[in-house]
Length: 333
Image (cartoon, rainbow, N blue to C red; front, side, top):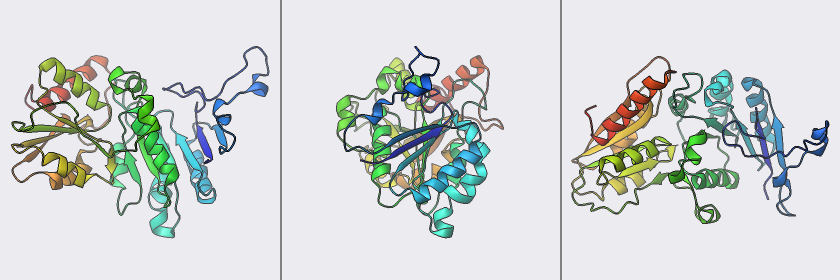
């Protein structure tokens, strides 16, 4: 098996998804002597499973982990931010090493960044993992940026990362607790045991493709808000496609899927992030390259803003509804 190394603040417990990698014996004052790590005892031939609780010194920790990946061979090395927003404290490491180290020096790194990302009214320091900034750094297949929307997709993405022969950094916009705790987003055990990661997920709803003239394309947990409101409004004739991998963008798969709607006239890119903080400006060219000849592209989401998110629950809810309603055509954009 492969060796797995996890670092980050609260990495054993998990800040959002309580993964419970570390079991403590609470019956003794020296519980650290009786730590139990279940994933170290799965199979006899498995690799090592290491967990290192690291402080909120993102630049130092990420710099060390990047260097570690250059020497560790095929180990799966994962750093998780407590909140994705905190990654900006390591921006120099990302710009100078992670995104460009291979191009400048031939250094191959398979470092994985898990960045909790998602809008819930918690404000600009606890909502946004700078998705647009990462996409701006993408070129020449230098790294992978993904925003998976199901547990199976996340699992197969990490599994693919471990199996890659040519190492590339992987940046994952991971969900906060409401996503995988939300029933429509669950995955069956069979989905994890079989299959592979899909950069694009199509809409499996049974609809007549012939009259469809509007298709929504989105990414991440925003899909579930769109899905819920579509059901309430009785708009099942609007397919919703999910781009799970934002770079490299699955332009050919998207083009093939859009071509299956002969009367398609409008493709909507829907995102929950502010217009200047999400993927829109970086994926627009890719989306346009996938359009059928008679279709046009439009944006549905929050307006541009200096802070990445608001910290007022009522304002957040109003903005979120407007973003969803505009995407579905319930209200004008």
